[in-house]
Length: 513
Ligand SMILES: Cc1cc2nc3c(=O)[nH]c(=O)nc-3n(C[C@H](O)[C@H](O)[C@H](O)COP(=O)(O)O)c2cc1C
Ligand SMILES: [Mn+2]
Image (cartoon, rainbow, N blue to C red):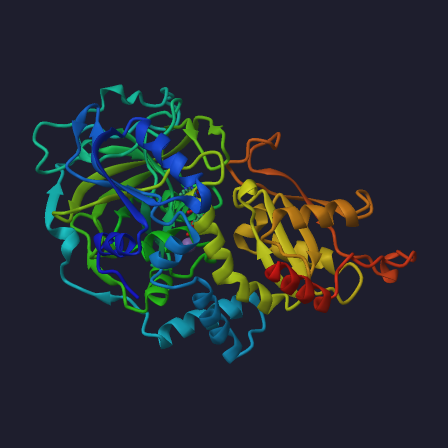
């Protein structure tokens, strides 16, 4: 089911008893983060929070702020218009099963053809709610600075509400300064739209944006991401890169921007598939790009390839501050928005946080694709403690010796799974969503030297542990029961278990007493 606005999604959350409104003024500087962090860490992920009067240095922003809207299993499903994310996984499986794919690429192609069948192609519209207020900026006289001109990351203490808030600038948006040592304010749910200059293919990715001033932000696409690849091509061609950033609208857009689709596959179509309705695309005012017409905000602008500026520090998903590093700069040329625009965002930090539920939904939806390639995979989980990439639990139906290693290497070869620092493989009867059960198997079933392997791999750009950024080792641990063909000849012991009839009898006895 599609939401025709972000506010319609909030209404659905409210009806489901999943939303808490906060009428009191709360500061975008640290306070909202502290509130949201407590909510996210409460049992099951707490509730979504709507701050009706977020303040910017004590002055109310004209735009309410919503946070933790996808931060529970139920809200994540509601965000995608579902009772359970498994419904989408089942549809994915149906599409793939219709014609067994012969490779990963083929599997994706089939999935995307399936999207066509489901009429998920975007449709082009001439205008939409995101154009209710249009603020085009005059061309800036002063360009951005180039790579070699180092300057400390912005001190945003001068960040204050402009008196004429009718045509908004970035200063009017209730953008959070999340953590005390953050380099400034960061847009944490930006959906960044770019185009491959060679093929015209669209990409939608979520890359956080640090606000430098009312017209300039950072663009934190990490080197492995598609936005960065597009940027590199513009740089090679010596062309200015058009970029449009959307905030809000159907939460399916926000989710699609985070989903680890292979490069070249269109997140807008994926969003259409999720919501079972074509995404209405409208042309931007000042750049040659199209964006969903029903979003809350559109930030239009460009990245001048080659121009870099220090970005950070930022209290990150990892639970640590990522240090200052050079990233591209986004220059705004226009802001358009709904009259009643809401500002959705998230807060990241020490897990578990809202993004855990988003990552888990991605894994569930794409599990059928993993299983197409590796039919022995039963289930897969990224535990909250591993913050997406640090740890993967995978259960398999083992049939032959060293199959666990095939699975590890296979996963390391699949898109963003390349970042997986530790992969732990367990047998089919272990529930990978129960970390305690996985650790039990790991501890009990492994001989550390025999059952581990190290590989060299690209690492998540946010990982502070590798000696050199972005490269390092990954470790695979085979916690499955060992076969004679794996050199284990002692006879693997049985797990201690009670027969079902005794369990039933004790259930009955306990119920009666
Ligand atoms: C809340 C949140 C914030 C994120 N911030 C960033 C970021 O700043 N930079 C980045 O490269 N990836 C970030 N990601 C991860 C990307 O959105 C994700 O890898 C996505 O699949 C990238 O899309 P792409 O493959 O089209 O580049 C973030 C994810 C979430 C959920
Ligand atoms: Mn992509």
